[in-house]
Length: 90
Ligand code: SF4
Image (cartoon, rainbow, N blue to C red; front, side):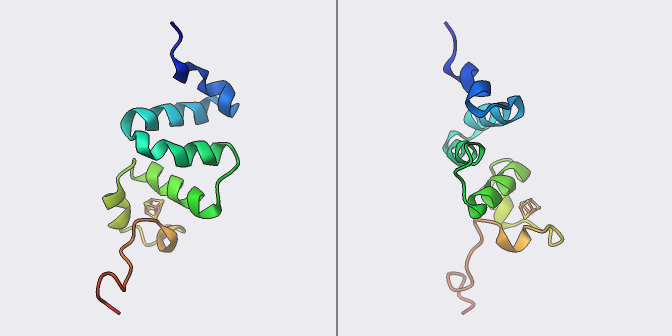
């Protein structure tokens, strides 16, 4: 029986994208949606940044929140930051 995930390459037209979605589905299924949206050309720039940070820290939200790579162009835009208001700084 053919596994449904074997259909991924044609879904995105790129084996590297299909592999990424497959790996995300295995490791963090709840995060696959943003990659599917991105590879389908339906993601916003904010969602693209989220996907990049998720890839960078391999689906670790805390790792993204605590990212120390201040030289990264996405640093100020990364998701999962604690807002200054919620942190009690404002
Ligand atoms: S901001 Fe941090 S987590 Fe996001 S891509 Fe840059 S280095 Fe990676």
